[in-house]
Amino acid sequence: MTGGWLRGQIDNTICVALAMELIEHGFDATVIFTLGEEAGRSWRALASWFGEPTSRLIVLDTSPFDNPEPATSGVVVLRGADAGATFDMNATGRLAEAADGAGVRVVWKDRYLADAGRSLGRTELGRVVAETGGRVTGSTLQVPTTDYHTNHEATTLTAIQSVAEVLTRSADSPD
Image: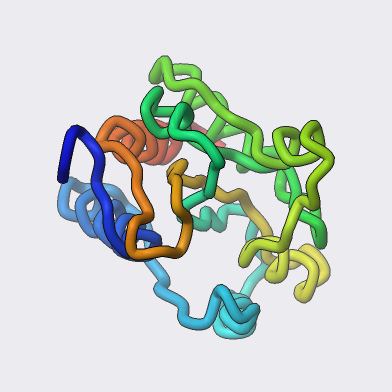
């Protein structure tokens, strides 16, 4: 930590820490850790874990931005879709409502990228949804970062706390 910023190879570390902290404080959920996300391989193991169709999968991740504002202002990052699939509107809506209830601003990454004329990219959740034909779906909740996938990747405690608050509130909301 320096100057309010957490720096390092933080992508997976933040998500693991968030999950462990929330479970320790009574968050009732199953946490699944996957490998090979960046290479597009993790979706197979994740999809095979679900015996029944579900729309309640929440994928935690980090999301790169070219400027520090999203992290300094403590936004959470949601998506309605990526380049390969549309995510579950109800699951995404629950997260958006939880953010609103917590007073946390949302950046819609798919809209942000489209407005900038950039590709929506592919996400782990998008691969799961596409490859299972929508049998396994849900939403993604991301922590905004800068210097993505470098030794200098960075975010703020405010951004991490915002994601934790949204997760907690969404778990308490009815379906």
